[in-house]
Image (cartoon, rainbow, N blue to C red; front, side, top):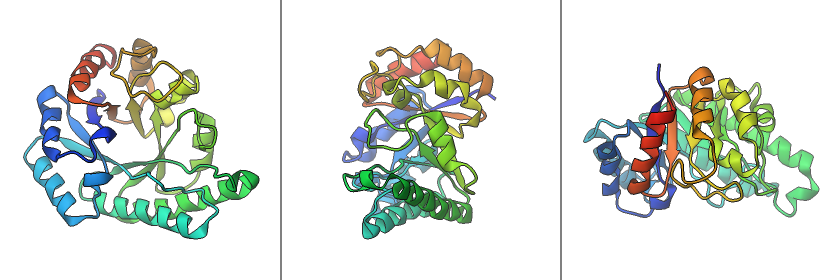
Amino acid sequence: MSVVPYFSSSSTVWESIEWVFGIEEVGYTGWEISADGNYRLEKPENKRAILDVVESTHLDVTVHAPYADLNLASINDPIWRESVRQICACIEHAADLTDRVTLHPGYLSPAGKLLPGKTWALQKEALRLIGACGEEHGVKACLENMINIPEFLCHDADELLGITDGIEGVGVTFDLGHANTVRAVDGFLKQIGAADHIHIHDNHGSSDEHLALGDGIIDWEKVGHAVAAGYRGKVAVVEGRNLEEAARSLAVFRRRFV
């Protein structure tokens, strides 16, 4: 089955929801909800507005869990517990919309840098709790690789797959834009068959610019061939900034992801 394009924009989470209708008008199959700001699913008024839009379109849905100020590797126990709670709450409320929720790994705080073994163990325990929540609600929690900020966990494919290995209910999201900031695109493509979900966007290799496909330096022909040959999932989420760039990304997607 061919990979189908969804669109997501984390830059719009404080905007009115009417922009979402444009995703279908541009030609995308689905919407990945960035569940933050006005799109926090646990707020009844937010979820009702989201459901109204989804029911008024033909868009399918996946979800990106909140991440602002959360840290699944925090050595501060109340912060760690609250981070786990918020991800689990997102999964619970996302369950009637999707079977895929992407989440960010934790990071090393200044204090956490002194205890790397403990932070790794806390991240693993957080994933076990989140995975159990996902199993209960029929949702796979997909941990995502991160950008070139040294404090983050999970920059390369081996680390991402290693930290999630053997945890029930947990999968992985390969973000190829993030991978480009650490010069790891080829490493992720070599293991594309392990991905449960993928995110695509462009940049120039130094920062997480979230450019339209083709506006940076990623070789989308190479990526498209690898995804077509080995990716076991069915969705590729274009993460962009606005609908004009979404349309340009979709044109590249249709040429390269065949």
